[in-house]
Length: 144
Image (cartoon, rainbow, N blue to C red; front, side, top):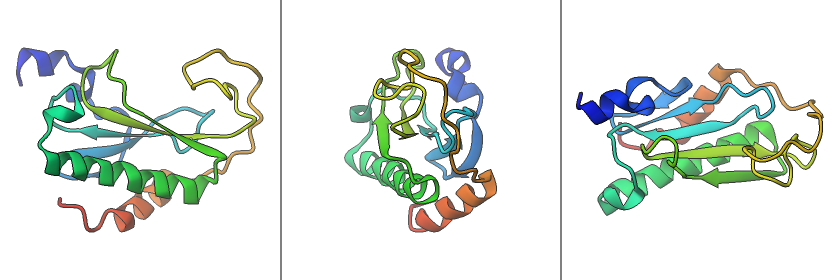
């Protein structure tokens, strides 16, 4: 592991509960009680930007991101999905797939923004195993 990779949080640790993985990327569930279904798709190699990947790998990564979005929508029935790829704090290519509800703590701000209300709760409780199974089915055609 290079010094850059050793210092990178997403190179050193999974980044959440691993729900699905291939040789190129992994899907993890973020432990956030206010946003059940919050997932990250993390490219395994240490790259900073989408354009650091060849076109075929970009498409593969987005295929995984969109499959995660579909599964999260089906299992958690949010009002909206936020997709984000920042890497400002952790400069390692990853996408956030965040289910949002009109009555969640931050709405309409991003989940990193100011809290506007107490969490309304009542979100679907879906076990990691169920999400992992749905992802495995949705991603069965992605190269492993």
